[in-house]
Length: 523
Image (spheres, rainbow, N blue to C red):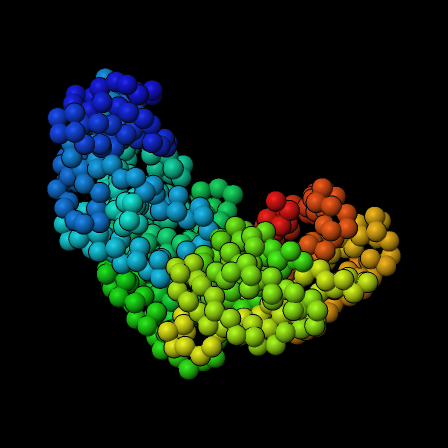
């Protein structure tokens, strides 16, 4: 449907915004009052259903009556060349799905979305309207980041043409409550369940249940327990996990009675977390640089300290330490000069800035990394926040992995380290290979990580390892080997490892973002 340049009554079509399985959305100009609107055009095939037009008119009138600060306003509806359309407010901020494509959200930002969407759902439910297809793609954002729920009732309007699961069920399987697998009896609780799924997805960047087919996904919703988010995000406390579990309970009676009750429980869970952390000494953050002062690694604690999202790590790699920490180039130059000369700096006072411009007082300890000739090739910097109750929010240990994930990641880590060592020996000689062994082993030893490298063989005490440990050591190894054999050779070597390993195993470590690390480092 290419309607750009055409006119629907008083609406002039300007551009296409999005296209999905059941509708196409256009940006248009309402000439009568000079405002931009969004027009959702449904396919002509729906009109083949004798009862569709009547159902469409009734449902859209109900949706248009919903007046709430976080529900997308519906202005008008009609037909154009036998195609039904709905006219809505135009927002420039994209969808929540677009926002989440940048990576997992921090808890505070996700909680704002939950609060706003819970209020919108409670209002709709009070008017007897159930959304039926709540998901991030139906949550729109304005330029200030406020959220608006859209597409109320669209699943019901297109009911007779819905083939989403092959069973005629309404909704999207990734967000469908278990009871929908047994019947089409829809209650407000299906929206609460979908909000719980979306909350999990906002925090992790992944779905709680994943399978090869929509029906298989739905069966996991029915039978499998809600995943423990703490295996993915160790900074999320147990009380928040309980909120996810209750919102996604298998039985309707076990869920929150309203979306607002879920939002209130989340607020209480977050407050209890803040109270628990008061008086606890902050964990040290870790940042690694090369000899030029470019960042080659930051751990999750460092990201939290700098008020950055988890997905920001890939944008930080390769940036000057001065830019990342908000210090001057002169301060960076002096730190690297001093640590290259002495080998170690202990608890040097430093004022850094987080991503929001707030100043943070830290004590930094730097340890030099040297090559086999004693030459300076980089430094490991740990940042310890000077006691400040207002900064207790950044506390987070390393991202723990469960035993299976650790074993998958360990296999990948060992294969990568072996390849890097072999590249070093082939193109630089055995002395440089031994130097790589020493660099990795010494880095692990001074950080009290149970990892060592000898002749390219990595020994790992699995239960003592965290995702950040693997990432840090691989970052250090890649940065060193690139100086010897070049980026192209390392890139090819890393790709060979990915190609040789079992595709299923690669899928597991891909979820842990291991494969992306090298692409980020080698840009």
